[in-house]
Length: 256
Image (cartoon, rainbow, N blue to C red; front, side, top):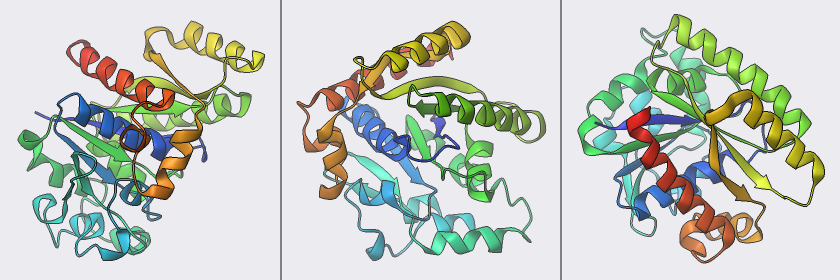
């Protein structure tokens, strides 16, 4: 039975897609069967997984409009070792088309129910805004993994996200909860980052993952080669941190 997690943060530029693709690659490396769902019309998670969004015959757009199944639309990325349900610009139109449809916020959930047994993890890369696409992700998920930088504005964004999750939990998906906060782009030399990190730990306790992802040039370079950092340069500190994070997540599953 697949564990379905959204990788979400309403603040942009926090390394959300980088976290999603590298966690997917890390989980694949430790022997898990992974499906990465790209719910962002920019298609960055698709391109970052070695899949050309311009060549997609079927995408998450077709799945949401129920004109294709996940089995038909998902592509196995040989280089990365996991399946990708890709996205491209077509997906921006789905926002408008979903508005008048029945069960518009449950489309992804219903599609994933069919493939529950085929994967150990389903990771959903959500857009940074709270849209119908993000709502589909949150309604389908068991929980949310929140990548965040240890900066003041990130704390502001976290408050918004927690409120959104509470609303979705109360009205649409009673299973939804925050699985944990992942500290990314961390630089221990910056005093403020250490202070915010301590604040997070004191406020959220064991909801803060032990693994910390350092600021790392190789992780930033990897998308231009169409690969997760974990595959592009396995020896880089950032890549090793994501593999450690994947192991930590697998260990935490029984307690969730």
